[in-house]
Length: 133
Image (cartoon, rainbow, N blue to C red):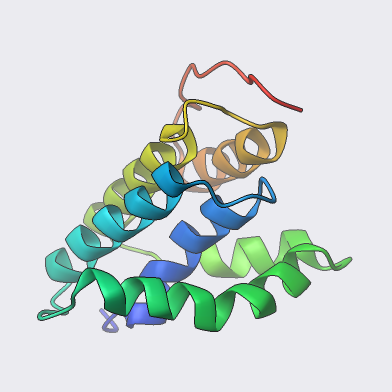
């Protein structure tokens, strides 16, 4: 199994934050919390919350461009299919869901992202009601 990089781990989480076009504090804190947990689980040790926050802001503009392009779905597919092992898939999916509901709102774009991830990985979409368009 190829080793996952920090970019591999954090990109789907960051997309979950970015996709509803706002970054409220609860989503950023959830991104940091989930990212730290996944990084450690996948063997990347010694990260601090500020490391993940810095990573997010260094990569956010590039991800926003890709998510607003005509190749958005291809980009998301490429990001999500990087994960092959059940432990990777299950934990990344759980982290994405946790981030998407952390601000107590569930936007249509978040719903579509979670639905895509569920379909790709063979999960049921969580029964979370869309609260914002």
